[in-house]
Image (cartoon, rainbow, N blue to C red; front, top):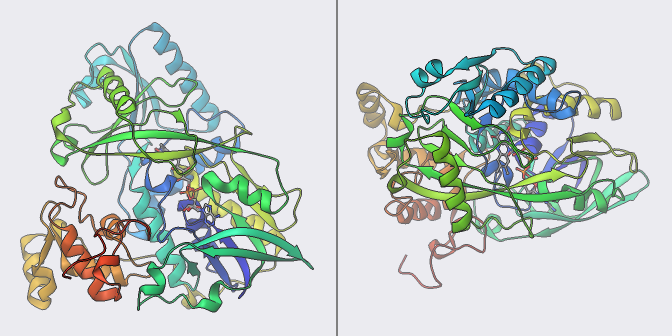
Length: 497
Ligand SMILES: Cc1cc2nc3c(=O)[nH]c(=O)nc-3n(C[C@H](O)[C@H](O)[C@H](O)COP(=O)(O)OP(=O)(O)OC[C@H]3O[C@@H](n4cnc5c(N)ncnc54)[C@H](O)[C@@H]3O)c2cc1C
């Protein structure tokens, strides 16, 4: 299939770029090795909208962090994604820490961050009663916030698909060759979930003989390998794992802002934060990963995360932890985001090394990459009624008033069937997630879209029902329904289903 633009990687960066370009009359494919979006760094991070005081002055990181932070609330509004600009503290416990606060403040001013102040102990404890009372001062950043990274990623891809972008899932790029100015992209099919599903629009010809005039490399931790395929070895990606502990929603209501410790050379330190959905989360540590896809957690690292978090926050109750997870940072050898046309390969754009604050920066990166593409290719904008930049969702059942619930249930029986009791998710919502533009095909896909399985029992009760619903609507046999990718079937070989 011939495309004008192929974007490799469907994390938040690739998906927002696809959405940004989907308003033009060009044929775009996003090629993703996993069965869903948001299965790498975007699916496992802190979800913080950083205000931008710590990025090195004059870097792309600093520029896109501040721009992206300013853009995030409006983008989330357009995409019906929850984003709460709740502010953040960097906590100081001694004079050395206080010096760091001043440096961060000065750096922030130079980066163009507004809404910062160095505040005293009383201010902090009034806002956050569970902060360690030994705190002396803090850098308060009013413009920081929290967002659901995977919901943003899913909504961006939904929007792109609504505008005609082709999403090639379970498709791994294995080689790139340039002939007569055209890229020929070799791919491997990585799983059979989409081919088993009767509702998937991917036809075999969509992913055979793929050619593109422009490639945008958004392959996260694997971006150096993709760049190498195009003949550009100018950078390396060093994978660094970060581990987290997530706590029950009972714990989230006791914290109002994002709490950072003073940064070290390894990163921003261990943070304590509420999530947009009301949980409490602590993490991440930073350890070198041998394997770019090794997202295993380790009890020693989690112990470190817990002990370090208790230095800033006294309200942690490990009995209320509900799950642990890890994400891999794509740390670039160049120390800055790499967002440019490769000097070694014309029309090949690297969007690489997008480590933190890449989630925050992603809306601004998408607009910047649109500019690069426009400088390389003439693109005509579609008529206003031929595309949309907004996505609308029904209100989640759990957030409806009793009157709204009654009204919804009277017109739709599936509303009355509550599948996930922890998070009050109805069968109607799960079905809607399956039929959405970038529809869920796995148990984790349903979980990320609807929160079924996100609660205290972590899917102990609802997973079998979610599997049944997935199977009924996609046609995938129930014993082939997977948790994440095709090799993670939930059941053994035999089942009565
Ligand atoms: C522990 C941690 C904490 C973080 N915290 C924050 C935070 O609080 N705030 C913030 O702003 N940022 C944060 N970040 C950074 C943020 O998560 C990333 O910058 C962002 O998610 C990067 O998105 P991406 O699309 O570039 O990469 P990814 O989400 O990793 O997506 C890359 C995609 O490329 C695909 N791919 C790779 N190779 C191939 C191939 N050969 N063929 C096809 N597809 C391929 C992958 O499967 C993947 O889906 C954090 C990151 C980590 C790891």
